[in-house]
Length: 166
Image (cartoon, rainbow, N blue to C red; front, side, top):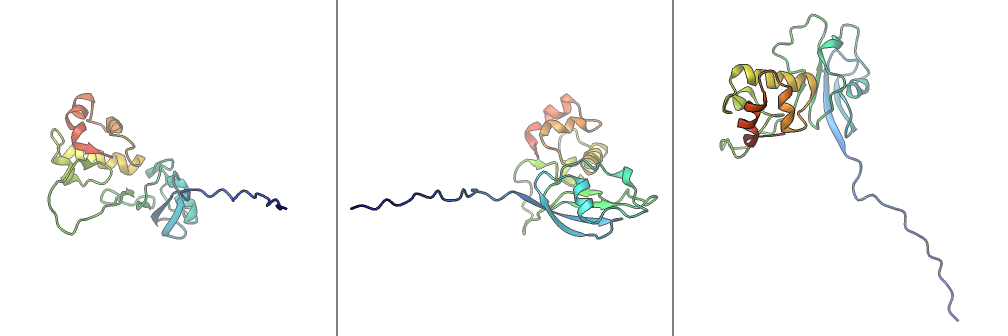
């Protein structure tokens, strides 16, 4: 006589855990530090995790709706603070042990001003505008997003399209 064995479905296991981002929040916040948030989180959520802004925070200097990128640094300046030399949203940069020169397209979310001026038709003013745009409004999600930078129109974008990446 065969005894039937009950079939119990195994619990469903996700192939990948929810993606997370780790960011550094600094400046005029209650508790500056490194925080882990869900992928797709926004600047305002990182600031909230840091306890929120303190009284002298200049809320108008940041795009609170900008998406976070893993390894970013969010700096909340104080009202009246000179932020011309401070990156408000600094994208991660991975340095190689040996500077072997360009090995591929320039990542506009990580590039320095010096990297950007090497692109055809991109001078100091445009490279500064690219960096300012990504600091204020978050990373470029596609190469086409470069058109939101003052000084980059369809013609300039077409000339650098194959030389840049996000």
